[in-house]
Length: 272
Image (cartoon, rainbow, N blue to C red; front, top):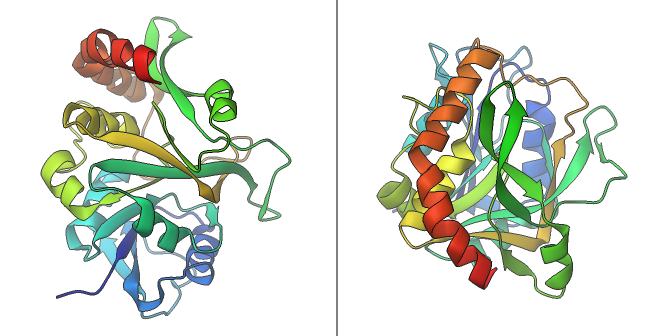
């Protein structure tokens, strides 16, 4: 039987920051050999070889599958009691992994307090972090609407003395859950309808809420995610374009909007 507590899956396509992200995970881990990092190279090798460390495993997909397919491939071979996903341009606080596995309940998706990362200086920017998000339907104009997370400062302030609080939304760049919850509730990230790239956090959270689970924000650890003012590489390899994204946003709304409006919002308005 595996003694791995946490499997960290990193879907990657030609982002040079993958190496700094791996270093941050390894240097700040407190799980030792109970951690494994699974780097999923989505149809392309890195120019610089991935770090040679017994805790790091490499999966090379011969054909590009996109972010969702990359996550699915990594989770499929993961051995941890818990699984975590991170983007390839993130920096972590000390002991993030131990905190996650010791606090994440069997029916939770958990994310961490999120800072904004300057990827050039590899430092957090002087912008207040996000400690909780609210789920809204955003009108993007031109008839495009989508589920979106909004910073929820009022809730974070009201619950500032609590280390773990429930939220309504999260960024897909980092999450953790028990492997059994993925197997029994999430199954896998769907690519039909959603497309290869977007709304993965919406899909996972909706499935979790339908199954009676919760989305939780843990403020005792944190990470930094590359700020949007720096070039984005998510689209590399997927040939994603605005029209395809718009179709994915519409698909998610068609699938979940009634549930969100008729069941989730009334419940949240009473409890959150």
